[in-house]
Image (cartoon, rainbow, N blue to C red; front, top):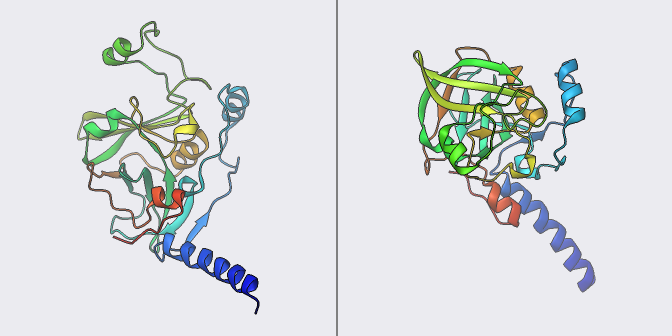
Length: 230
């Protein structure tokens, strides 16, 4: 084999090995976006949305993965450190969604239950948000340009609203990032998919900051580094 051939072969082998290491020996099956769960209003609103349809970076695309923890099927785990939300399936699998983490999301950690679910929820900005962004309306009806997006999932402990929300977004470019406002944001397509699976009363485990537990490191994947399993 020529020197050039060896270099090309070595490069291809390196890419394959890096891919295996990046997966942390996990099997990952990316799910193509589908409109199967979209209702007529969803299709109407999403077609009217004025925000840019930015593709989500591959490490944060919806995927079925091997699940490494012990939560029961039907529960969710929020890993804000790694910008992932897991929906637990049967047989050691989970659906992993990429998320945006807002400051409000860092104010709560622990175990909660889904206490309320809304389609195209209205947005009522808090007093703090009004201070940061003058001129906002007292409330904004649900719709394609509402920052809560297509669905809202509200977490409760007993009868107490934790003020922790999982919701859609009109800023998909921030999936995989941390920003100054909001709770846990997902693309509208992903939150519609999740909403169709989640049941009222489902358990949600919100991991505390710096206690992330994902065997796959998306930040290293984006830079071409190697991810190690925890």
